Length: 104
Image (cartoon, rainbow, N blue to C red):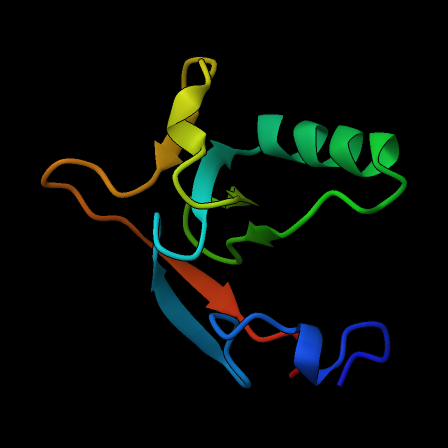
């Protein structure tokens, strides 16, 4: 396991191995961005927070989106630029985010 993050500090929604789909809006909201904007935002967040930006998930196939995870039910309270989508629990809508394990 990662030495900096050990068992009592790993949230239950992070799988022990592989990947798992998690319903946005339950354990987290997600802000989805496409590259190259997502790469620039991630770099700035990491730089400005001294590498303590919070969870960021990158797709390894397909559109190469990045998902910035926020506390649940908080993503909808902000105005996001065009092309950015907030994934949360909404009236009649559900969105899932693939969450990878911390280790292989």
